[in-house]
Image 1 (cartoon, rainbow, N blue to C red):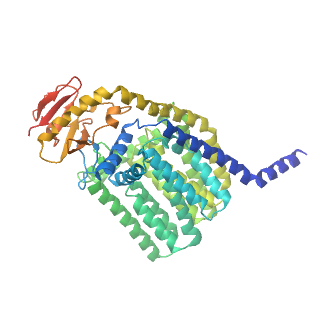
Image 2 (cartoon, one colour):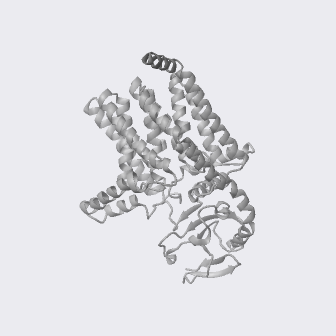
Image 3 (cartoon, rainbow, N blue to C red):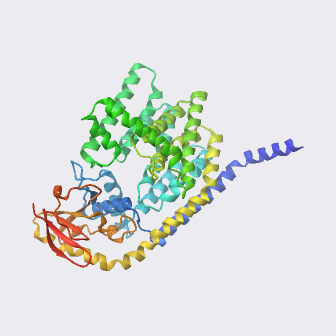
Length: 497
């Protein structure tokens, strides 16, 4: 009798699964709509330093059609275009959105731009020919993931990559399912477009090798990968500022001065440290769901490897290769802490999930959805805590207006320069990097001069500065800087040699 009841219950769930998935998707979508309403109605503003950088770069392109970095560290700029550490593509992308919003009379915002991208993705899924069940599963995984929930109200770029990971996963599956060249060409073109924003997208090209059926195919896809890597190297060399304290940058500099073995051993040690950080020491006690997510990704990758060997499904094999390369590069070349690892793995995670859904690996997909739903409450609590700070920025801006007025006094000194673009160097302690109305409102133009800002970060010799003006919150004694004015909050210096 008990087995009969269980069997009837199972049949009921299976027969009504589309309705169940539809209700779950609708609930998650309505939560998403409510969050969008919140950040618009309550005017959420950036609160973290990276957000200020992306916002000011987009604002600079919107107002002045500039692709150079509005802010940087230690006067680091790209060789071409004076771009920052992330290049100039985000400036153009979000700056174009800003222009469109301003034309429509809407206050420009990276959050709003990301929302438009998400809605475009849902339109893409809605008009796609895949089954309703697969559409709903992709939507549920997408909407319940903590990266999406938390970063949708930020001015970071994670949502951009998260959205396009779904499209890449879909195209990758179509490449293997249909064998049509148009899907392959679209995938390659999209990959080269995306790697201009973030170099790790080049790892998608590793996923083409399961297509190999001959030596000629191997040579063809190796050439495509080589071209992708060449574009990455060129972008890093000419169109991105070198982040001198970045571990990957340190490796590249060592390759030119040390033997391969002298370089390899520190990399091996760094890998061991990163394994410990990923699985043990970087436990995120305040945000345990982040720690659990790291294990979820590892478990999903192990399952994908198992499914690849068992099914010989080339789409799953391709997705597994891509996710493995992403994961390996994280542990070997980068730093898995401060949420960097989960942000970096969000794209391969959703890419692999899309492939598993399209390949009908529903049991594994169901477990992932269950994991995300069980952590949903903790994720929303964290989001609300961060968002309260975003809302409070409006109050801080009003309270800090006298400070901003004092800062703007340097505008009267820029008129003495004949050139149109002025570089302003600033002491790192001049303003907080988080919850900073001054940082958020840095003026990009003063008295007809365009302004770029650079913060002194860690070890930087001010004697090497090429800036025009230097602003500090204290008296400085640098021999190449002359005090030209001050008020109760700031000291203004001009570089004299």
